[in-house]
Length: 180
Length: 114
Image 1 (tube, rainbow over the protein chains, first blue to last red):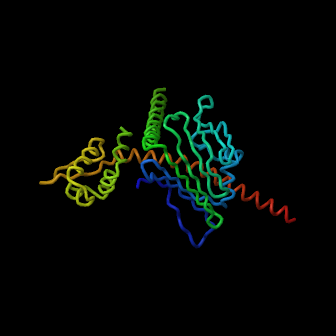
Image 2: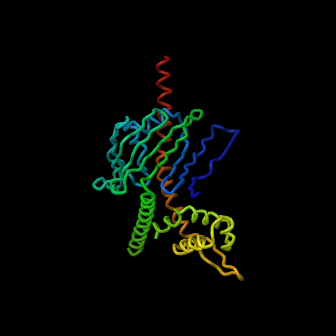
Image 3: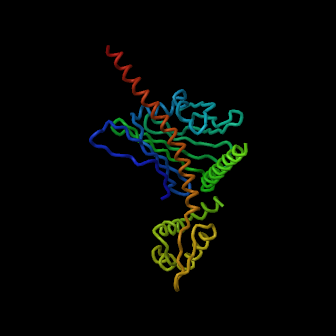
């Protein structure tokens, strides 16, 4: 299967206190499903809190080093409750994810729908996040089922385009600066 | 181009052909035999894969060898990798927060037991 991995996890049995970098994997397991997995060094109840309490979620959810901020974060984590995240690089023109919780089982499982508002016509994805306690650590599995194969293909294709546009923009900047 | 590439890979038999060719170039008969498909089906799938640039044909003696081209697969891999980096960045921030929450629990417990 197509898979992307971070640096290999190093085992060091003689010095268990050495912190090793936990590996994040992303797999496309079918034509409409992506699965992200990662271990977090803390008990499931804390990791679940970090996901479900807005004041905690806003501290980690936006990938800051990539220049992304979370501008708004509202969530009502209970069955039937809704959420809305506005994020991106420009607060005047944010990306928005919104949806509704269909299953809330603290601290082991969340199921919710997700609409990417810029591509709302593509429909709702269903996301299942599971938190498995493994001796004080948490095995996180985030499975995203897209509404159709086309929706996932579209996300991949637009991501690729965005990547290419970013590269071209960087190239423009480089060319411009070398002229000065 | 990219959507076409994914559409080409989205068909299970074509995906299996691509997986098989990852181990090296193969003649069409070999692909047919290993996947248990009929000749016209294999030819049709190979044509689709060739049209999107995923495979190349190279004549070798009497045979035509099919081989994978790396570039289109690299694009797909790059996307998954970029997506992984977004999550990795989030998880690193989550790690820091969870460390902080663990410490806070410890000090709270300590002050309670005092």
